[in-house]
Length: 508
Ligand code: ADP
Ligand code: GLC
Image (cartoon, rainbow, N blue to C red; front, side, top):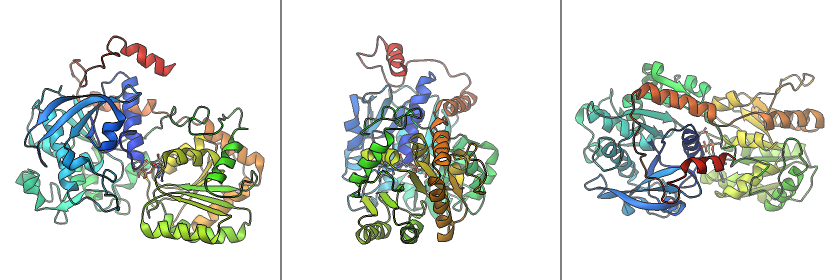
C-alpha cells in the first residue's frame, strides 16, 4: 500500500505525483498488488472511477472518516481514498488554500491519513491488510510511527524521501490530539528543535528508508543537504537505500503525446519545429524557428534557483539579441512578480506563464531547444528527463538526481560530445549559471554537436522497470513469506474476468 498525498492524475503539485503513480503502475506490471492510499480530495474523487465505500473509520483524528475503493480512471491502478470532506474537500491544492496560504490544520489532515493507514494495517477495517506499507514524504511519515507503536503484529514500513526540505513541522502541543505516545516525543523520537516533525518520525520508525537518487542519498548525510536531519539519517545510513525514479515513458513520449501539435521521434525530428512555433505562440513570442528558445518549467522557488534565473536573464538577453525565454511555473510570489516584470520589459523575448498547466508543460518540453534547470538541491528531478526525451537539452546543476541522470558535456569546447546529454554546472552564483547557458548557446550554434546531444538524450532509457524491481526486492526482504490473497481493492466488475488481458492491452 503506497500512502501518499499526491498521485497523478488524482492530485499533483510536483514530481511526487508523477513518481508515485509511475511506481505503482510499474509495480503492477511486475505483478505486485500495489494500491495507492491517499486523501479523497475533490480532484481525486473526480479522477477515480467505480468508487465504493469499503470501510468506516469512526473516531479518526480530525473526525469520522470513510474509505472508498476504486480505480484511477483509464488505468489499471487501484486506489483507496480516505474520505472526510471537512478535511479534504477544499478549494486550493492539497496543502494550500486558494490564496496560497497553508491550511492551518495540515497536521491534523495528514495525521489522519497516517492513522487511517495504521487502522487498515492492523485489521481494524474490512480492507485486506497490506504486506508492506510504503509511505511517501512527510505527509505519510507518521504512519511508521503509529505502526511502530501498535506493536509486533503489523506490516513492515518503508519511507521514501522525495524531498527532505519539506518536513511537516508542527507545535509539539499537537502531539496529544494526534495520539503520539509520550515515548515517541523525545529527541530520539519525533521531536525536532521543540517541534513535532512528521518527517523525523518516519526517519526514526520506518523499517527501511529510501530516497530517489544515489547522489541525494549521499548528500543528505551531510549538513549541507541534510536540512538538520543528517544526523538522524547517518544513524540509519545502513538502512537507507537509493532507488532512482523512472518516468512514465507512455505519458512522456514525443511520438504519441496527445498534448503536442505534431509528433516526432529520434528517427524523424521534423515535427519538433512545429512544436517550437506553437510554443512561441503560446508564450506570446514571435515565431522564429531559428531563434534559440530557452525554457524554464518548474516551481519558482529557491530550490530551483528561480531567483538566480531572474538575475541572469537580463544579461543573457543583452548578449544574445535573438534569444527567446519562456517560463512556466508558480511558487514564491516575489519571483513570480520578477518574472512577469521581465516579460513586460522584454515582450518580444520573454514569455511568462504563471500557473500550473499540464498541457503547457508538455508543449514546453517539446518545443524548446534547451531547458534551464538550476537546483540548489534536487532529490531526483523529473523535468530535465522529460526534456531529454523530447530532444530539449537540459542545462542543470550537478547535484542529486541531476548529476546521476544527465551526462555532462565535457568542459573543453574541442572535446567530442561523446555520450553527453546536457550541460551540468557547479555552484549557485549568477556567473556559474550564466557560464553554463553561454556554453549551451555556443553548442547550439554547432548543429552537429547539438543534434548529437539531443539524440543521446532521446535514446537514454528512463523507464521504471529497473527501479520497480529494486522496490520489489526491498518489499520481499521485508515481507518474505507474504501469503498471496485477495487484492486490496476488488477487481472492477467488467475487468474481473480479464485483468491479464487488460494489462496486455496496455502493453500492446
Ligand atoms: P519537484 O517535484 O521538485 O517540483 P520535479 O522536476 O521532480 O520537481 O517534478 C516536477 C513536476 O511538476 C514535473 O512533472 C513538472 O512537469 C511539473 N510541473 C512543475 N511546475 C509546473 C507547472 N507550472 N505547470 C505544469 N507542470 C509543472
Ligand atoms: C520531489 C523532488 C524532486 C523529485 C520528486 C519525485 O518533489 O524535489 O527532485 O523528482 O520529488 O521524487
